[in-house]
Image 1 (cartoon, rainbow, N blue to C red):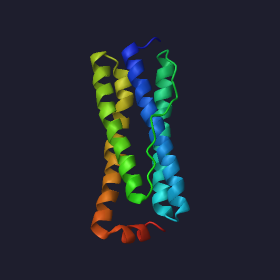
Image 2 (cartoon, rainbow, N blue to C red; image 1 turned 90 degrees about the vertical axis):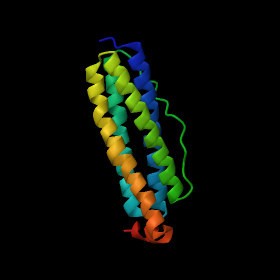
Image 3 (cartoon, rainbow, N blue to C red; image 1 turned 45 degrees about the vertical axis):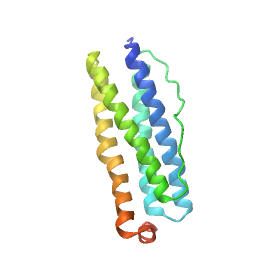
Length: 155
């Protein structure tokens, strides 16, 4: 099946962001684990798995529509400390939310409702789970202080 070229290009751009999010979560989870922050490391590793699933769905859709995924992640922004990790990961998630909304609108305009349907759960997951959780963590750091937050994540 040959997909709309604009939709294919937009899906490839989304894929670049999902791959970057996956890779950024990957390095961050390993950094947090190395620092002994096992609870938050596990959560970030879970986010990496979610991003991998998003990338997989996009790859499959691009291939089904007759495209070839470029498989080049967008630029990574690796944090140097826990707040920096959260801020950088949140920035990626918010960019993905904006991109997903644009591509969903494009799909509606092109009457590609199957691709739109594939993207809606990704938007919900990105907005209501990933971004929201990162915002909560930054808020917790502000409320209880970084040392107390870090101690709570050693579990």
